[in-house]
Length: 86
Image (tube, rainbow, N blue to C red; front, side, top):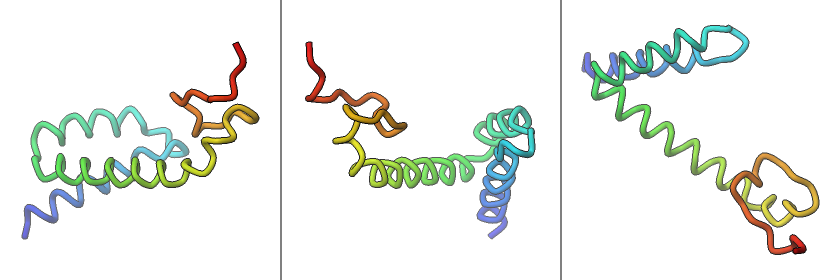
């Protein structure tokens, strides 16, 4: 039970400290590296969070990719368009 609590508490601490308006991104990066080394349950939580965020962003950007040739947007990163003339 304590292992689950430690994993969630460390993950929550890093997520909160990663908010740009708090200006604590350096602290969040340092804690993230420390927690990745010390707590395998943090690694699992961070990995699952990353997978969820990637899947959500892919689902969100999927309808916008066909418009990359007309209006560049963040969803076009790394995508090639069929409408580019040589």
